[in-house]
Image: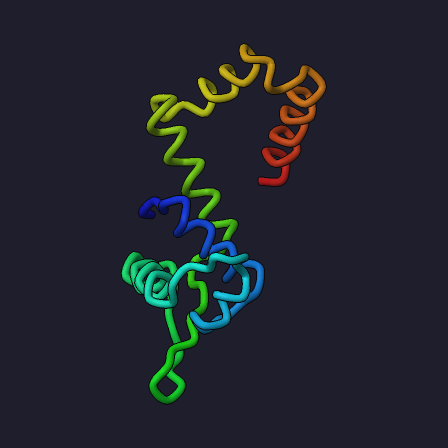
Length: 122
């Protein structure tokens, strides 16, 4: 799955939260000064080219909708981070969180319980 820029991710957030949208509708989500219609339209078309959005045609305008769920995007992003920064090792990632004290012992115990519970369901 291709990565997204911060602006692309922000725009995908609108689709994940609100559902199908016309570009013109998206302008109302911004405070002044709002981005130009053509700027948003260009970003949305780029998201469609990357496979994150598709559209329905209504006359001479398009209503775009997400084809990648937020959950699938999050999973793909996590896999990319693990691959890029932790040599494809989830153990290294968790170990780093523990060492940096970003995860408590109680949270780690809960994680172990969840993994064990998932393993017994298989």
